[in-house]
Length: 94
Image (cartoon, rainbow, N blue to C red):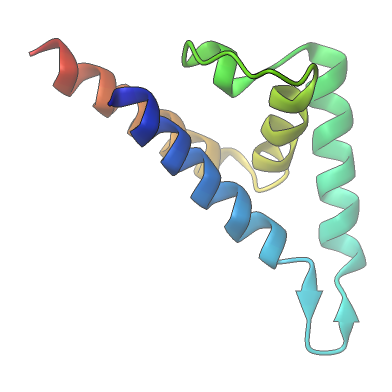
């Protein structure tokens, strides 16, 4: 059950990030650039939030790509997502 909650938290955060691409006048180039940079850095660093949460994905590098999207939103969002994951683990330990 905890893995489902963690995937749900991450999925919502990624969807909200992807929605930022479109703006009234077209594509938000700045947001796309931040996403690409986040993905590049996550891939280069081998960072994968799913792996950290103990969730194995069946597609190589997908975890790093999705983590890069989260990273592109900045430290506040990543902190909130990691806090949610930690909260799920703490509640299940009780």
